[in-house]
Image (cartoon, rainbow, N blue to C red; front, side, top):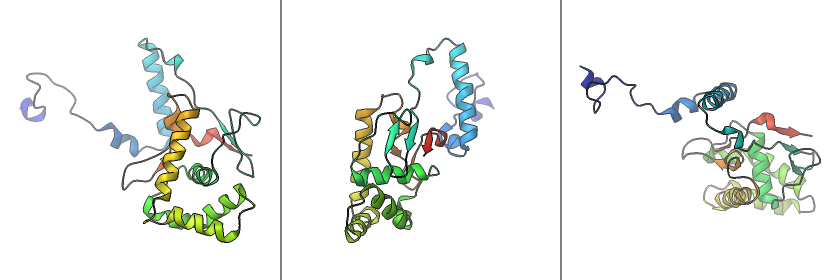
Length: 185
């Protein structure tokens, strides 16, 4: 009987294999933070040195979308205007964005880009954002790659994943950074 339930484990009762990624995908941010705290405590009790892991850095974003790291007077995160526009959009939407529906964010992208790059003609703003949301154009992927590579240059390896745009095909792309670490000034 046990062999049918747990193949490959002769005479031993064990937990069936679980895909924890699917479990985590269904959890809300508060549940995930609580789980992370419990896991960190458990690992600490087991003698694993988690104290050496870097902590995520807070982002402070002003009305002109200048991004400062670590505090309101911290160093400015330097990004190209369209790359920064994409980063700001994803920080504004911690729930994530389905790539096939990115055109529905066109007006928001135009507003962000116009604020970041105020001397750009309105026609140029519309044209650049149109390329960004066009499903046939590679501009979105290019800007995402540039952003993720730039963040790898600037941030410690242990936390960079929290700031990058990530996601599986068919699922929302998102930045995993805890929204409580993003301050809109």
